[in-house]
Image (tube, rainbow, N blue to C red):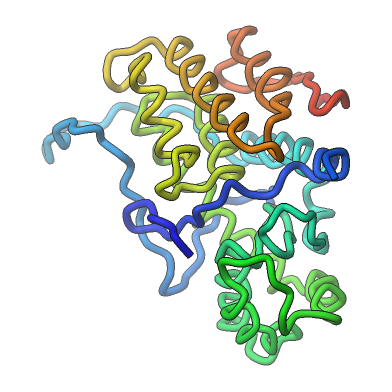
Length: 298
């Protein structure tokens, strides 16, 4: 697969699955536990040429971030509203189908894809933790179909066995840990490095969930680079609201480059609404719309 990982973290080059409701029209925990695996590596955020802080610098008191358990739960519900048309993100461990987006099977709480490497890494982690599990026998096939939309070696029983595995707490924990390692933790780290608050960290997370972080022009890193041509993040002396508007403008541009993502309500009537309201900390209550459906968190 043609992808370029974040430094220290493998992130699929995935302009991923559409929100599942939108896909049909057109044709994802309470704690941020880091997995204890050989794959887990610290993410070093992009510094844009800035000098490293002095080793003797005294850090400022930590502000609340998206990794706060309450805020993280909000983030999971926000993404699930777009990906699953539901706030019940924990019901998605068992989800799996081919949504005809060219990325094979899409499954689980964050839409792991058989064609974009992250599903393979998930099943590898599950098998490290529980050898002989019901999905372990599919590892050779998952390696063979990686980078394609093929089901070779997976059909006819892969989806059935995935749903069986979803009843296993070990598999659920593996999904949580891979979501955090590959998507959530890098987004929060980059957001904190850029000096943005909870909403800004969430905009990064939602972008990397959909677009991945490869070399293509619509990847997270290149969305961020595009925004840097219009504004600076707070860590570089910029205004937070101005920066987030520039980032969301770049995100909308990226979404419109692919038909499957061209419906931009997850930005326009959700994230942009929070920003216009000045809710940089994602304080509840929150009301938003995605694909015309209304959601609320009190």
